Amino acid sequence: MDSAVTVQDVTQVYVTEERATLAVQQINLTIERGEFVSLIGPSGCGKTTLLSIIAGLIKPTVGTVTIAGKKVTEPSTRVGYMLQQDYLFPWRTIEDNACMGLEITGALTKEAKQKVLHLLEEMGLLGFKDYYPTQLSGGMRQRVALVRTLATEPELLLLDEPFSALDYQTKLQLEDLVVETLHAKKKTALLVTHDITEAIAMSDRIIVLDPNPGRIRQTFEIPEEIRTTVPFAARELPGFHALFRLIWQEFGGQEA
Ligand SMILES: Nc1ncnc2c1ncn2[C@@H]1O[C@H](COP(=O)(O)OP(=O)(O)OP(=O)(O)O)[C@@H](O)[C@H]1O
Image (tube, rainbow, N blue to C red; front, side, top):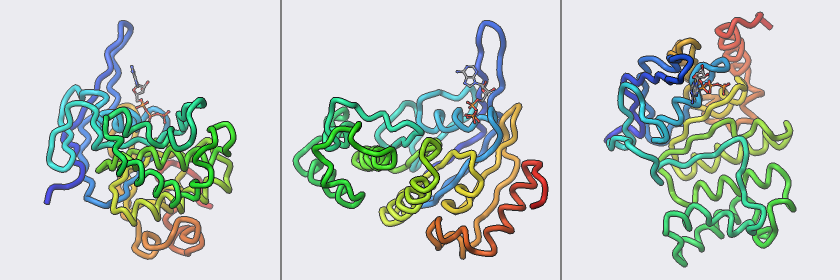
């Protein structure tokens, strides 16, 4: 069976009138179906560039991306996005916001709407379906964004710092919910985050990028004990701290 995602020899050069920037160079990576991979690295190392290329929003200068064996040439519903901002429309109800993706792609059937209501129920939001975004907390709004993303049944979820605007407690709760939901639905995910603990707690594998130009520096496989524990509880495991120290040192941090 094909891997969920294959990034082959991808290089991206941005050319402006002033300069050419080599954003990422010779990136090769494979993500298996159902795998949860995190990309971490310092600011400017090309994380967003790589996500945009995988999503088909940017055509790479060199190289190819395939999703489930099919070459990516443009954005498609095979890829779902969850971003730092929820981008809910304030004038639409929660239910109507959750149906947005289906509406845009012309797939909002009666059956699809039922699925959205079911997803809202799973996320504890059914009672809020007739509310408007301003009446919900930041965490609830991100849960609506997750429903909107899952509703179109993407094969791959790209999560670009989806928790970074939330307070710490909400962030921890949402990490658990996202991991449990994606595991249950056997979804493949690629998370970009600046938070090493979040990456360890949520992922099966972490890819560390170097900047200038963005290149893969190292890959860390997450031990099974951590992988099979929900993020909040995983933080309590002794192996978690050892791995954190190892990755922290990779970033040039001091030994704790
Ligand atoms: N549209 C663009 N035009 C020109 N240069 C760009 C463009 N987008 C990104 N870059 C440059 O490419 C490099 C990688 O940027 P990118 O945003 O992908 O990094 P990042 O790791 O996501 O950064 P951050 O963690 O700060 O979000 C940087 O040097 C950036 O200035």
